[in-house]
Length: 264
Image (cartoon, rainbow, N blue to C red; front, side, top):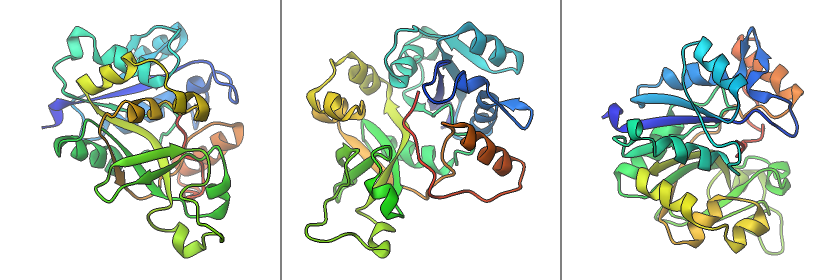
């Protein structure tokens, strides 16, 4: 059933911390090419498309053979960019759409596969999480946490340390397991649920936390969370570029404490 799943990789040229991030070279290839090659190799997907806001990225992607579509540069998030592509006539036959972050060249297929399985099980939206693993990550506002129900439903996403352990600090054993979970910036969506999500106005909790997934949650769209192994993280800084080059050239092992982003 791989032809039922569309992968869209949002790649916005501007980045606050790393200028022209998709174009940044890693071991002789731009970051976006590494991500595209990784995703294209996954049997899960019938089609893989890069969604960008800039001709520089479009031209580069076409040069290395990627399918790419220009999207509205005014989009506030990668999810809006993904939805625009998913709503194009040529891609409407895909009932499932996966938003793969354009700055994670070592994303493992197990993560999107677990999220897509939740869609096949009946969820409207799905994402992934893994145990936080460290007290630093628990307290770091750049690490998004998710509280998950016993049925796998997302209860809340926050930059704050959740769940709160009243009167004490979670120990390493607790942080290595549920319910102390780090959210991964990956979304699998039923196509119609994705379009509903982006059609909604920004919600109060979304604006407080600056987390777009809270808009869907506040609207009552069923949102499943798959627990998966942690990944190698994404690229947000020059230091991340150097770390990723070592990983991609086989000179290092993944740093499981690296931040899992939710970036466009």
